[in-house]
Amino acid sequence: MSTGTKDRIASTALDLFHANGYSATGVSDITRAAGVPKGSFYHFFESKEALAAETVKLYETSINYELLDKGSPSPMSRIKSHLAFITSMAELDDFQRGCLLGNFSTEMPSQSATVAAAVERSLELWTDKLAKAIAQAQTEDEISNHSDPRRLAGFIIAGFEGAVARSKLTRSRAPLDGFLETVYSDVLA
Image (cartoon, rainbow, N blue to C red):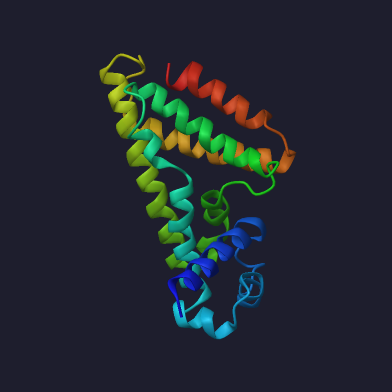
């Protein structure tokens, strides 16, 4: 069996977990949507839980953390590009899915310590990258708020997750717009 099959199973699972949640998505749903026999699933993944942890890593690549490291020489411009990108991700599906990390953050602690740990690892990576960009922006006087960069990054990520969840509820961009306005006028001012 090819790694193409493994990738198809993982990307299909990511789509289904993101749309429906972990509990509402069964292995049969995944294999049916991927067009593979159940045996293929178990050839590549020991369990649905192992696959869900893998989808967190796959989702991580779509968040484009690299925008915080590369691109514009201006750290604040990189931060704005990243926040605009993740906001546009939420908007792509008319705010119906939210953020997989946020969705799994509320669903997985009672379901799987393994998946919860994968989500926490991803959130920590995101926090580290955002904190580094904030520290650079502070050093370059693009941000006058000299509070701890890691604390600011954690606050921004938690705020984004809350805003995207509210946008999912209201099917509107308004919570995200309010979040971004507050970040730029009050947190990263």
